[in-house]
Image (tube, rainbow over all chains, first blue to last red; front, side, top):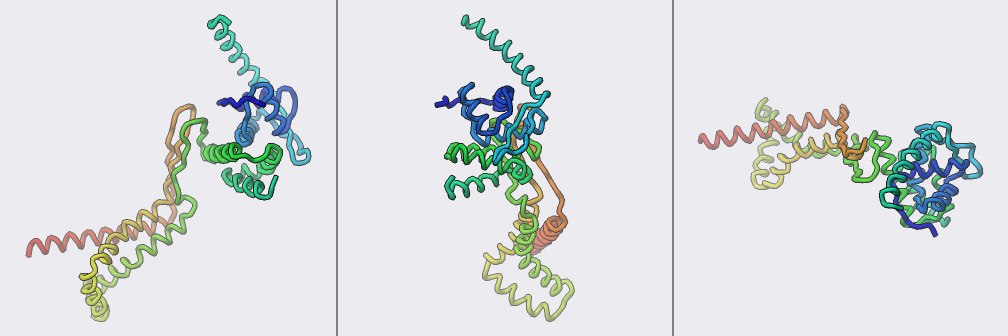
Length: 100
Length: 196
């Protein structure tokens, strides 16, 4: 069972999830729980997804049954790479400082 | 999903702005079917809906307090009508008094004088007639102001929205004129009594 952890940045988690390929809402929830141990609520997920779509970082694909898959756009991929690069530097610095 | 959970899910969707519901409502309902509606997910959906409404109103909220104060905002005409009803007895009374004493109309005076004498024994009604104009003014103006509190660029901000609606402004204006007339009347009466 996924560990209950809070996060202030569900949009980052969704972009990471979509970076591996298009997914619909439920698949994104399961993927995020799997790789980050974070259980996003359905309202949080769609709130972040609608903002990312508004900003042109993800786009909806044609509806498949009652589910709509989403995919990351080139702009979303570029912004994700930039954000992860910043995080990577912070994580490496932090690990060095704690001697891990 | 049970019928009850389906109804609750559709109710929760009302927390979102209409335009958002049109675009994502069916998808979110589908996701609630897949994940099953729990108290935790219901709370999450409701909170996200309120955040979405604030976002649509120009406030982007992440964490912290998020409130909109404007309970009368959506029903301006109803509030104007309620204000008019509150104001009506005072309006009739002041109007009749002016016709009777300022224009010296005998028939109106014959109606007003017994009422004035009766009111001398019913101070509560007298007080309500005086309190009605300020109450009516507040009721008429309430739907014209809305305050939103949320976070934008990381800092907590309050956004005050004011609008002008002719009917509400007219009722508030009449109420304030009546309040002014009553205050003037009370002051003049007090001065005359003090002088006597």
